Amino acid sequence: MYKEVEAGGLELVTQIGGFSVVLDVSVVSADGAVRIAVADLMRSVTLLDFDTDKQTVSTIARELSPRWLSAALLVDEDRVVFADSDFHLGELQRNSSSADEDIIRLGNIGERYCGHFINRFRSGRLSALASTSVVIFGSISGAIGLIASITEREYALLSRLQNSLENIIGCVGGFDVKVFRSPNKAAPVASLSSDAGSMIDGDICEMLLELNTVDRKEALSCFDSGEAAFVVAAVQKLALLH
Image (tube, rainbow, N blue to C red; front, side):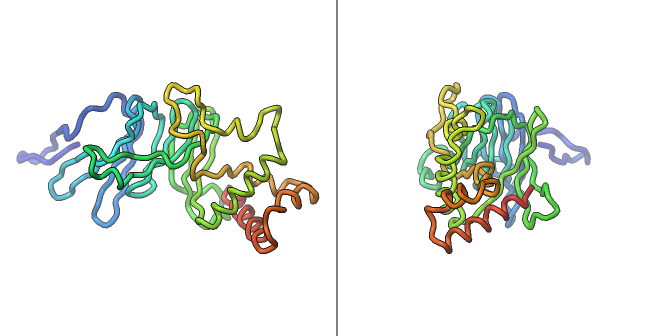
């Protein structure tokens, strides 16, 4: 970082080291606290705290797996969305239960195989019809996608819808939908879990809107009438985001 010196100029001062190849840096400032997420090619994500009074930087959390990251973005003071070189997309969260350890861990709370080498995250909107901002990602292949936050109720119901649709759709182009989206266990850094965690596949959920009447009725058969109406409305709202 740079700091002002007595001569009135700026001097480059090393505040913290130990990184290999930094590919992305994200900063969030809220309530006087400044958080910095550093995506390193060899050392995954490190969460830093910048003390505005002392003008110092300190490490407060880290993901300990040697994941090769390609991009990261701070969603808030404790959560980071990430992409790695094995085409995974996921989210990390600071684990307060590890506060008694030397290094507080960033836990993997959700991960999916997306099939694209993502190298940029930005906050914004893809559609003029969208009512809220989302996390937009871009890849070296030119693909653009987004990550949107949903409520606990929406997650619970959309998770059931996703499972129902996966059984109905089965496969797309010869690929099993559920297997294709699962984290790649053959990657050099094994995923912490084969489960997608707290992430819902919006592409699969939006297939509900393309089904014929018979298949849509079957997909919604696991819900009561009130839940079914809520799920359809939630999927339509997600579709407006792009």
